[in-house]
Length: 436
Image (cartoon, rainbow, N blue to C red; front, side):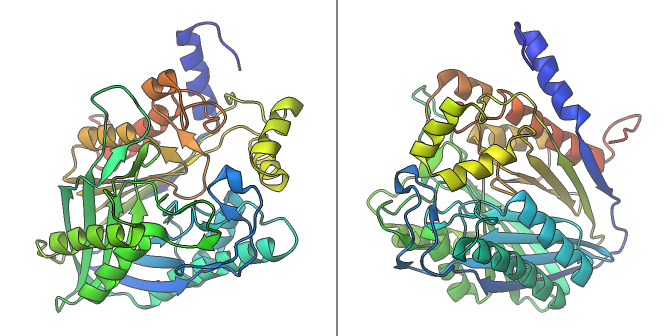
């Protein structure tokens, strides 16, 4: 779709989104007991698979392992309503096709229909876009689907009645890597969800922070979870419970390591998590509830035409043909991000989107949600590349230009507004009532 004015462009954008909207409602559970289970599986790939995250590697194969990659799963249940949350030491969430397979398995084996599967965005993990390619890369993708589903199913089996607590503080360990305009926005909120059994023993800590895990030289073709792996390691060893890292809106945010390597940085951030967890008095919610909405979008007017032979050639040179072929096929029907929104106990909002959102999206969402705690989860349930803010797109630069941000300008704001709508609607805030 094309337009000659800003107003007609915005109408075009909204129409392409609303027309293809798909919402899965789940009524608020009425049971009063929250049950929680957690489980971790190793998802380290075999050596010899193309690595993800840096274009200058092209299709260079991994040569070893610096530290293992994990899928850390958490299942929350209130009566028959269940929600799975997975922190994944991979650069992106599983593809659309892989997500469908995972959803099928966990529904059949555990009755779980809704999930947040969040990639940490480490740039030292495997390329997941090669699931249809014959050989080790495709075989790994299929095994990863099974392992993520296994982590969720096992976490569901471990559920026990639980208490819950939430806390957040600002931690100045990240920086805006994109804009040159002051003041630079930075979302420095470190938020955690703490789950204990009814005897006070920790079950799991879920950590939400926003900073690119790009701490290791791209020339090292070795698997690593980067700093989130060492954050989790410290929390697990100190509190003797599972730990999930849930990456935030890190599209324009990097770590501020100040001389620390990724291991020391992760441990330091882990120490902040442990300190914050100690301030939480977890309580069994008197009337636990889980409400969930999921929504698909389809933006038909991408900023770059991947079918154009000249553009296709440029992408092939910058990355490698098998990877580019995946995105040419993926975007043949437009940019199709996914949104998942959950409201827990009427007080904690989780908003997950399948791309690299800029931090101002998250900051504004939290300000506008009017909830005690709102967590934004990026790289969640598929991956549709960057979603810069409108002002960032106007400024340009990496992450905001069309080559890595094919979604129409304003798509990020539209998706965030839909997330906000769902949070309010699940609380019955609209005076005359609304249907999705």
